Amino acid sequence: MKGALIGCGFFARNQLHAWRDIDGVEIVAICDRDEGRLGEAGDQFGIARRYTDANEMFADGGFDFVDIATTAPSHRPLVEAAARAGVHIICQKPFAENMADARAMVEAADAAGKVLMVHENFRWQSAVRAAIDALRQGVIGMPFFGRVSFRSGYDVYAGQPYLAEGKRFIIEDLGIHILDIARALFGEVSTITASTKRVNPKIKGEDVATMLLVHRGGATSVVDCSYATRREPETFPQTLLEIDGTGGTLRLDADYRLTIQAAGENETRDVAPPVLSWAERPWHNIQESVAIIEQHFIDCLREGRVPETSGADNLNTLALVEAAYLSAADGRTVRLEEV
Image 1 (cartoon, rainbow, N blue to C red):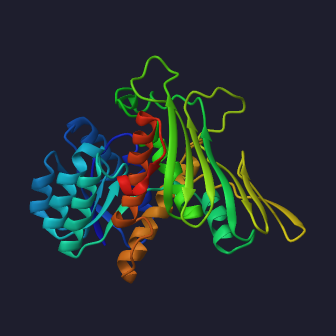
Image 2: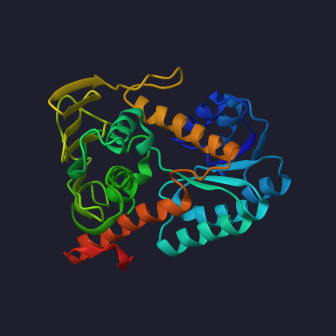
Image 3: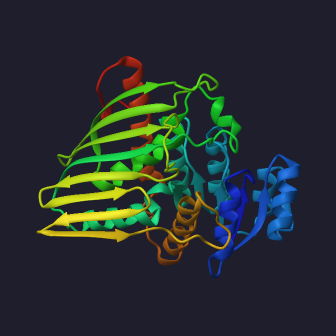
């Protein structure tokens, strides 16, 4: 199975490494408007076909899917071009700048009969996945409360300086992942109440967000995110979980310790992810999740299945992001139907 990748920036190198490790998959073409990045990626991964124009790459064809690893403003035209070219699509998050664009992309892929998956990788981190699987197996009964937390002081701006420039930051860039984990754990959301704060004076957007979610299944969850939290040891980039159920409790603590207390038993497991040959600490859990989600995408193409993080599914995660910003701006609880 042959693929192409658009966008050769900071995070896309992880995607190229992961594609190279999947049996029966080869990235045969890459595209980036920056010729320097394009050349570096092409040389590193031995990819001869290099383009600065995505439309030219689609016109030349010769691949089955495209991995769009660019920023959100470019997603709609690229997804629609991929659909016209008749290739399957995996698209980086955030999926779109607004709900209208997101719906249009889903419709374009559906009309072309092609798979569209969003690269929403946090729910695929192996430690988080262990918690999701345990919850879905009913080991602590029916969940009624949860906390999904990501708090760090890590300098994310060094590798991705554009993060400091947008009017929106932590909910759109990181919170979207944490909200998606809450959906994976507790199901769809009926209402959300959010507050935000900018602590770092050198950035333009919010770097702290706290959100209260009421889920349709009856659970309540708190989702909190911060890039202004200074503590030792630094837990970046770990997502921590606390879940109460009718039959017990589940916790995913720092250093990847999963504790389940249920039916009179107390079990703690080490669910630390491996450090892949091309990965490095502390990014290794995210890097492993890239490999896992890309394998899921290929498995779905080969088996004719709908990806768990399909474009249609991600509309619900994107709606949570929009509702969170609306809630924070208006100072009120927002029903998801509003967005």
